[in-house]
Image 1 (cartoon, helix red, strand yellow):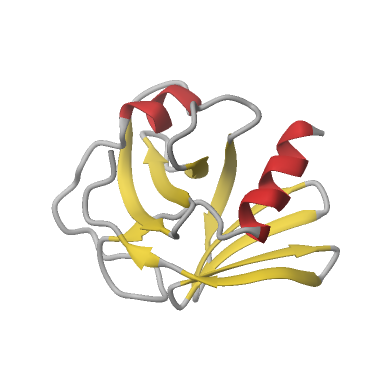
Image 2 (tube, rainbow, N blue to C red; image 1 turned 90 degrees about the horizontal axis):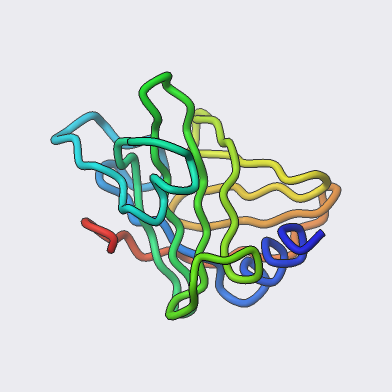
Length: 136
């Protein structure tokens, strides 16, 4: 329940961001592989490669791929600890236009340098994202 609320609030007020390392609006190309930040690797229980990273004024969104190919969406409130109250990590998938993560009735979509958060198909947030080349 806390993660659902965090996810909704995070997206409602600017969303955690994930910066893009390649083509805006779609899955990045495989340029130089960078390790995911430690806070993200801890949430996915192991090493992972950075796929994309974005930010909004209040949030950081990082997308990483684990060794088995699973993409993870990681949302973090800037300046807060990676706790259940300020952080969410979800399995995600690559789509034709970006990425999609689901958390119950909530969806988190990265598309055309925007994060779109919906609940049961109703858009709660559509916020522009700023790419980040190397998240901390």
